[in-house]
Length: 507
Image 1 (cartoon, rainbow, N blue to C red):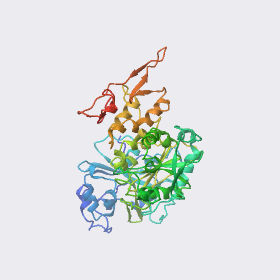
Image 2: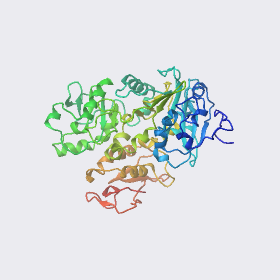
Image 3: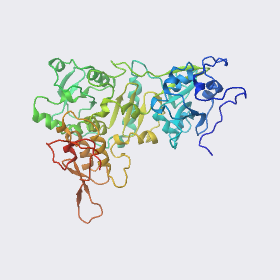
Image 4: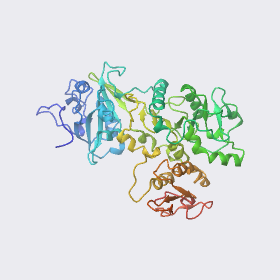
């Protein structure tokens, strides 16, 4: 029996045209619902919004071939909504449109089984194996709610409206407090909460916009962003005239109730090579000890600003009313918004994200909160259940490489560290001499045994793994790496070390 059940699609009259890909492009002149095409008018969307769905997906259109642009240009309101979850990458592939109960779609059914739900619509390519309903989140959802529920209060799990040009800091503060109070054991996995400050740590005092020495036991936020063209701070910047991204990060720090912010460009002395080198080697600890890291994932440089603060949101949340139902977009899962960004292509940002205990990610469409236990996005309303681990199955699988100790299990002949070296080596560096410094924080996690069962050391970045089961402590040096194409030499490092070559490394 198929995993899908077709139970809601109305039976058309024998004289009606059969729903197919072209039907989505035909104005529904024969229907009293002039805003719908022929195929979409066969479904009672208001009823679908009201009904409590079963715990398995319900098939709406078994095979939809319309392209993203065709759906987007259609005069049908449903089709234009579906365009938000059918990206151009799925053009040419037959896809199945399914209705899913929101707690199943967002994997909260085990967390809050008695919570009120709504209906969401997802899409899945027919040529891919479908294992869990949550897999549709990589393309996003279109949620259906009653048109009278304008404030989206009729459910516990479902869509949340994203303000077009502002951030709801009240909701963000609730998320942060929930993490801080609900799962400190997991979210302090990389450092103790009262660990001494990094030696010589400087921070920006956001109340005065000046760089100061960090007070003892200073609770600070950190910023992960793309510099753009490398240059030292100008005299004006030292007096508090910061680029938009830094100014916005200061505003976010204050709005969240904090005073201090660490930004590498201002908190590392750029005039002293010795002090600069010493602080760079401690960057892993700096991000690990930060209470939260603000990640500026939008834009190409520090002049872009944070979307929702000074920069506009490029991708606005789609809304449309059909019959007595409101269609509202739930944005695609985080990696879809991050993978193509400049931020995700830079080598330094790899360990900045990986070593942080909590991350507030600003994308062009929404803000994402990711700690070592929980994933939450601005366009999704979720229940807060105290002390529940919140490890969302599919959501975590795509983000595990960002969290120490939860890295996806590699093939049996590979170690997690070698897989991370491969991921890191795909990224770009302005200066090849940073190829080891930009990864030292990750190597330190393995050295302390916080990412695997036994500590792993390194020589010039080459992993030195313990040989388990021996009576005495023995190690082997992992030199079985290669490039798919000739790499560019970095003469500052040994030829046998992966750090000595530019290009993706495979073990």
